[in-house]
Image (cartoon, rainbow, N blue to C red):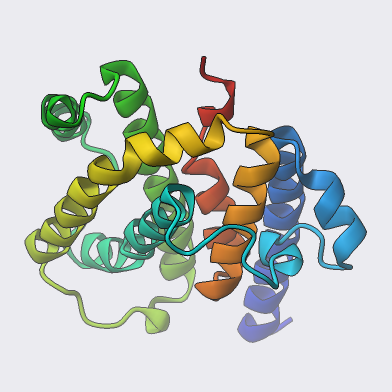
Length: 216
């Protein structure tokens, strides 16, 4: 069996595993039945998100959009780390980031623990994409392009973080009105479709919202 067939088979198997994991995560959010009813590619949230479920000016829609923009930067981070050999995880830096975000959240009268939990989920989602891309790059390094400056990427992430903090309260209030899981699933489904996310990034976008609907 030649190298192309081996890689193709591995990528197909990986996509299948991602699809199954994503479907499970969507069901746990409470919206999986909609995906099952709406598409043969049920595991990808974009399949059930052909129309915007909430106003584009709503806090929730903007929160999911900003989260998707943040997540998209994981690709550039992965390329940079592939070239430099830096580890995906930096626990000390993550704790510093989270503490800074908690401090910044005070000006918006947000609950510190909820802010910390939300951004922890954002970071884990970003790492999920990085790990998967780095695994692919290790097998097919020809896919890797030139690296962008990591500090510039991090500045973009910081800018998005600040925008998230400014609308987090409004988005959280919106989620508390009605069925949180269904609202969130529909918003994620639309955004995954709008961002043209593949299975990996769609799954990571679900992960980025963690247990937000299970918090009091």
